[in-house]
Structure formats: structure tokens, C-alpha cells
Image 1 (cartoon, helix red, strand yellow):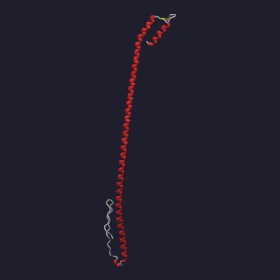
Image 2: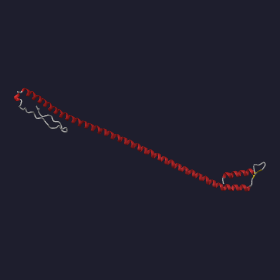
Image 3: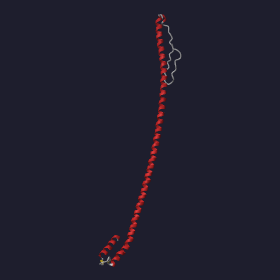
Image 4: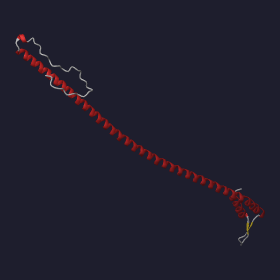
Length: 187
């Protein structure tokens, strides 16, 4: 039974009792009063047990809350460490990427410079070959013009004489080998 209810019953018993006129005393039914007191004695340990049980529950709830708080703090700490590690990894990856990009730019510049140098060398060779061929063509034109002018000046009976033509280099032009300057004059 609830202790509060028993206290209320004891109070009602006193209120129902007879007051002695001119005194502060009240007469109560002794048997009912002792019965309520016995019930109080029985109820008090129950109330103490209930209070102890409530205290234990409160302690369990507080312990669980503390454990949960500690777990949350640990998770937050671990998460922040993971973020820091991740941030460091990202920074390292960015540094590595910048290094790779820089190396690629250097290699690209080197390859471009080498390709430009190769193309320039090939063009210089081609120019020499064309210059040599042009020189041979001009020499041939001059020779033909010279032969025609000589043939007109020669008397008709001497025109049948064959004037040997200089040998012209008839090799095909090879663009893979370096150009050679013409040797001597072909006239």
C-alpha cells in the first residue's frame, strides 16, 4: 500500500477523533490507529525498496547516458582524425598531381623542342637538296642555251657535230639522307 495513502488515513482518524475540551488532546480509536501504523511499517520498506529501485534505475540511466556520451565523443574524435587524415591524403594527392603535371609539362616542352629541332634539320636538308637540284637545273638551262647559241653560230655543215653534254646526276632525291653540296661545276 502507498505510504501517502496511509498517512492520509491516519490524519482522517485523528480528525474523526474526539477533542478534549480545553486541551490539545484528541481521543482516537486505538485499534484503528495501531492497524494503520502496522500497515505503515510494512509499507515503509516497500517504499524504501521502490526508492532504491528508482535510484538504481536512475543510476543505470545515468551510466548508459555517460557511456553513450563517451561513445559519441570517441566517434567524433575518430571522425575528426579520419577527416584530418583524409585532408592530409588530399593535400598529398594534390601535391603529387601538381608534380606529375609539372613533369608532364617539362616532358612535353622537351619533346616539342626536339620535334621542332628535327623538323628544322629536315627542312634545312630539304633546302640544301632543292638548292642543289635548282643549281643543276640552272646549269642545264644555261648549257642548253649555250648549245643553241653555239649551234646557230656554227656553219651548217658543222652543225652535225655532236657536242657532248655534261653528265647530270640522275639519282632520285633521297630526303632521308643529308644533302650534299654539288661537287664542281657541271657546265
